[in-house]
Image 1: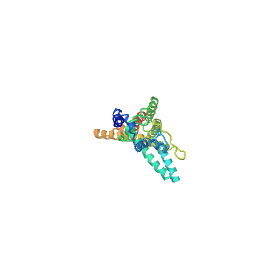
Image 2: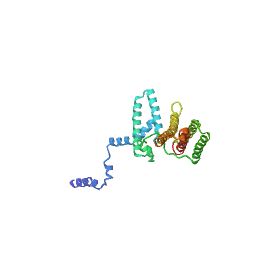
Image 3: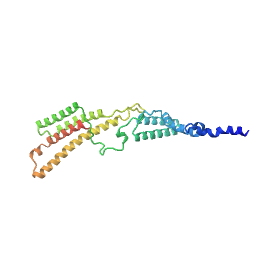
Image 4: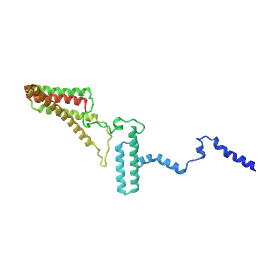
Length: 267
């Protein structure tokens, strides 16, 4: 009887030692609560996207629009429980997107540009000109406009400031078209009334940027003429007649060169 008991107990003592560490998990299953918690954490992001009615491939603007629409519906129906779930789901999705942004990857491990990954590194002058070379055809058109204005004021002589005004109008159109073409494509987002959001804002930004570049070139030409005139007066103790009587021609010619360079190689 004792021998039988010893024989029966022997496998119970030595069997676990023969089992590999990886297969011991089959003999010692995890607690039910821990497994449920792991499953909940694993499916948390997926359920958040389902609550918002979006997918990880949707853009940030689409996520915000879906969140606003769901929140408005919940507030109208007075569903406090769904509103709390919606807030939690939106926070979860935003935190996940923020982590992806810090890592520099998006859905599918696609690398993003440095402007998005390091969005805090902004230029010193946000509205300053940025390099953007135009096509050869556009460069030739800009050179033709500048040359035509310079030849016109050279023939007419003292033509007041009208050629400079025509020059500004011409390059305003040229720069505005370039900004429209070089603008990155944006997926249209429709609001509750079926209108595209942000179209007027983008158009206003292009107009103000074009005006800023034009006025900057004219200001630089005028400032350069003033500095040169003062230096000549200090050096020669008098002002040459050609510099004094042809102020419009000099400023317009300098502005035409600056506008041609800006419209051709910057934006």
